Amino acid sequence: AENIVVPNGVNSIQLGLFSGLNTGGFLVGVTPDTLPTASGNVAYKAPGADVKTITVQSVAEIEPFTFARMAELTTAYINGATTIGNYAFDECQNLTSAEIGPATTTLGLRPFSGCDKLTEVNFPGNDLFVAEDGIIYGVEAGTDAESGEATKIKRKIIECLEGRGSTVGSR
Image (cartoon, rainbow, N blue to C red):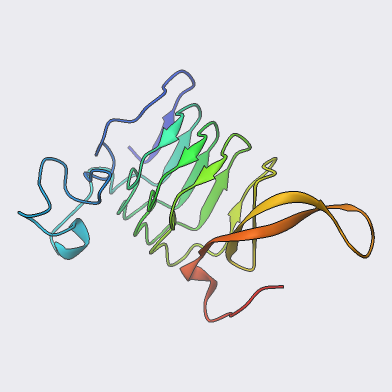
């Protein structure tokens, strides 16, 4: 299937369904002492490798590595998940567009690691995260010191997207 929509009412995704990996980044059913991570396995192909678009509407938590190594994935819409785990989209090398809805309150470690073509992530209606110049920040409400207007204050860097190129620093 090229386009997958996980409909409202579905509250979890089976471990390894799309990536074939467990939450530690190892192939499902294989222990770390018997096989290296999938990234070290040249012949590895994720079960969801042919999916181009994924839309998640009500899954509460996107576990670590849930969509990792989906080679053809270009677009991800996550609306309803409160948590997106570590390396959730690891090595999705063709991912160019990601949108994270307002329900997301937690982003794990480098959720878009290895997504070389992803330059920005959109957070419509989400007051906890913002992406600027290819950097995802955790933010909180505040007041601009000069204008006195309400603003989002960047408090934590979540990830520097690899697709942002050689740009260094932020505004």
